[in-house]
Image 1 (tube, helix red, strand yellow):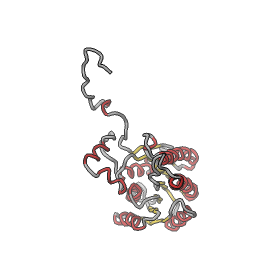
Image 2 (spheres, rainbow, N blue to C red):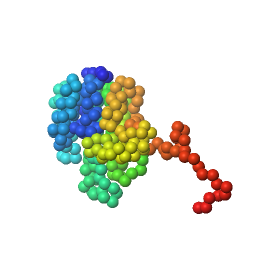
Image 3 (spheres, rainbow, N blue to C red):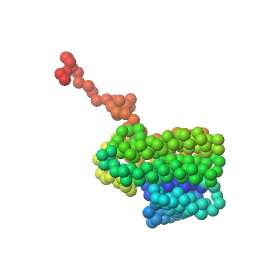
Image 4 (cartoon, one colour):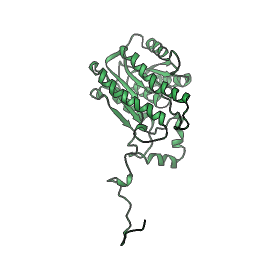
Length: 272
């Protein structure tokens, strides 16, 4: 795979989970990948080792978002690793997964979620655009949780804002040939969500919520990101691409390919 030969990419939150899969895939496509991490140095090193073992190129960049100097630290490391090259692909993946329900969310948890999920991507984009080549790619990781009601209100708010940012930014930078899109994963099995496949019954129940009848994997999301990063997606911008396997598309009993259960016949109206 050589779709990104000669290109460079920054993937935030790439030490594990979806971010790691994205970094591995972009490197496999030929990109030099900056693997960002906050505190998991060993995990980030594992991502780089995996890339190099497959013949790719990568380097780590450390920056803890939500603390003073976070964006400066990120771009100091990024510029050093790129060594004069422009940035071609930016993937804003790093995020805080939860602040709890409405009743459980504290001011401190809310502020941290906003700092990592919203403020950091905004200012990363601000700093990245001047060093991004014309025809570059910005890909933001949103969430299918913005479409399906759930209890994680602060998280949903942050990801909804990321989707809105992507559309407006696409309009602003389109004259440079830069595309901006968001990818919205559904439930995806990572190191922190192994419970999804803890038993066959749990996995089957979660998979049944998707049209494709299985739970998602990080590689599924990475494939969608790789497409948007490639020249094949040159005419796609301002879009929210759901990579969910058809999460909660509708009741299965209404499917044209799954006949509904037989209905009872009544000679008179049934009592209520």
